[in-house]
Amino acid sequence: MMNVIWLVMLVSGVVVAGVQGNIDKVTTAVLHGARDGVDVCFGLISILVFWLGMMKIAEQAGLVEVLAKWLRPIARFLYPSVPVDHPAMGSILANMSANILGLGNAATPLGLKAMKQLQDLNPNKDEASDAMCTLLAINTASITLIPATVLGLRVQYGSHEPASIIVSTILATCVATILAIFLDRYFRKRARRKKAKR
Image (cartoon, rainbow, N blue to C red; front, top):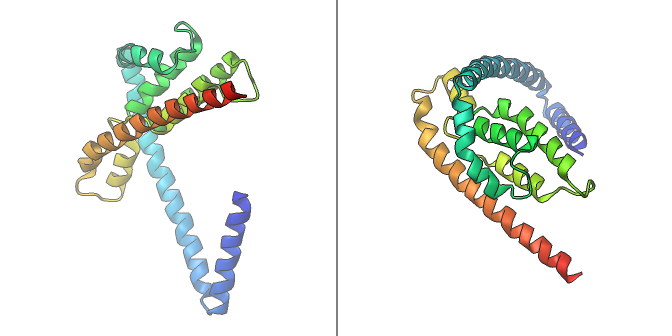
């Protein structure tokens, strides 16, 4: 579906530019867009390499382990159906730790691994389990203390105060995470009530 939408947008843009006699602007925009895309990718690569290195240092220094230990009681509350000693819990804790440290790119493979391990625990393979829904909701709206990627992009584009977004980011992600947990629990109870009525 997305491919169709993109195709319609591209074709309609070219047709409108051709009708208006501005087809040369399409070529210029395509070349500039491609160059900007390459610039952003290279900027993100440097940010990713830096923060993955920091994550490795934090991991070897035991910071991730300490953070995971602090998060363990919260994870038990959020994922009551996951046994504490199951590998999925370790992946969930590592995913939460990476998200809190603003390492979204490093958190993604951990989240995918956790989701796969939760699927192994899922008794109904055709439907997402409660724990899988919770993981998706919290992973999407995770509390972020250091928005590393956004900070790097702001530095790359010459922001005078790239770190000025940290406080607002923490507040916004806290509110988003609380709302995600609330909605997850609300819809979980609602689904259970519907099943009980059947």
